[in-house]
Image 1 (cartoon, one colour):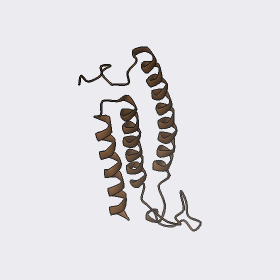
Image 2 (image 1 turned 90 degrees about the vertical axis):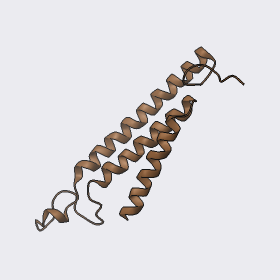
Image 3 (image 1 turned 180 degrees about the vertical axis):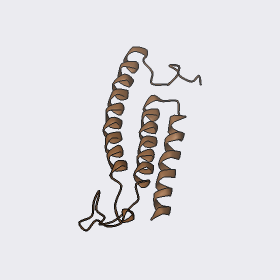
Length: 113
């Protein structure tokens, strides 16, 4: 399970970094979203992956290792909401920039052929 999570984090982050390096603004926005998803998975994985574990307290007051840490889950939930808002804002800025400049390149210039 840990190797699958590590591979997913690596693929999301690597793909996001590659897309951020692209010349078009839509690809940069998608790259930033993929990086944020990779970071969310990383933070979520730091909270100990437990199946059928109590989130805060056990009924019989069990050992702390048997409990799931709720803080990473709350952080990831907050980050998801902020990520959606950031993506929506970036898309609005992309559309405004495209309307004003007539191009969607990051530097504002089309490559010469």
